[in-house]
Structures are given as structure tokens and as C-alpha cells.
Image (cartoon, rainbow, N blue to C red; front, side):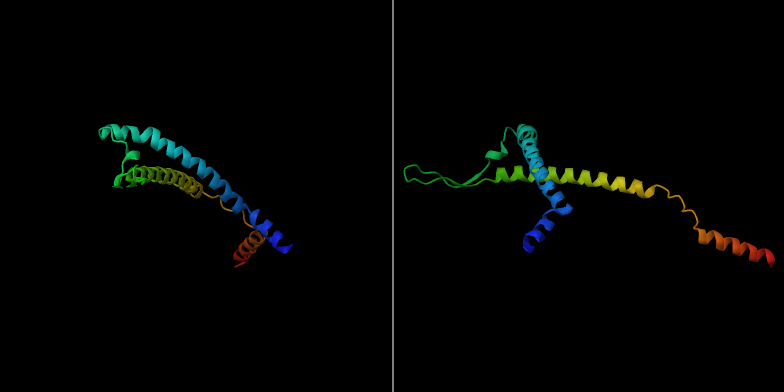
Length: 136
């Protein structure tokens, strides 16, 4: 029974819940970035490079042979290029988010703090000091 209670406490911590939400949002964001790379960014790059479709680029090691019943063995480096572009887009987006958060923190730190009002003890000590100065 103690194990289940301990697991429940662990699973219900705020950081674990935040992490789970981050993973779900990250998965959805990954799909958006994949679509953006495949459907928006890669077609113009393919057009600029003369109609090259990166996703179909590959280095064939062994051709497929239907008679022998073997399949093609190839290194699909074009897909790797797409994944690198997706990574760069995600990294750039995260950079922008972190930069925005840091600029908000700097603005909060830059706000001038109003000096705290003196405590009752400080006021009394100041009065005592002033009285002693006036008697001297």
C-alpha cells in the first residue's frame, strides 16, 4: 500500500504534470513542424535546386531483384536532410521562446524597487539617536 501512495505522490507532483503536458504539446508541435518542412519549406528549396525532392534522395547499395525475392537496400539521406531542417526549425522556435521569457525577466528586474518603509524599531532607534545628538 505504501508503494502505491508513494507513486501517486510522485505522479501528481506539479513538475511531473508539467512535463507530461510538455510532451503532449511537443508531440503536436513536432507534427506541425514536420508538415511545415515537408509542405512549405522543402518545395521552394526543391524548386531552387532544380526540382530535387529531398525526401526521395537515397544512395542505393543493392537494387531490388524481384526474381531473387530481394528488396532494395538504400541509405535514404534525403529524409535525414528533412529531419535536420525540422530540428533547426524547432531549435529556432525554442530559442525565440526562451529569448522572450528572458527579456520579460529582465524587464521585471529592471523595474525600480521602492524602498521598504522603516520598521517600528528603526523609527524608535532613529528618534533615540536624534535625541542623543540634540543633548550633546
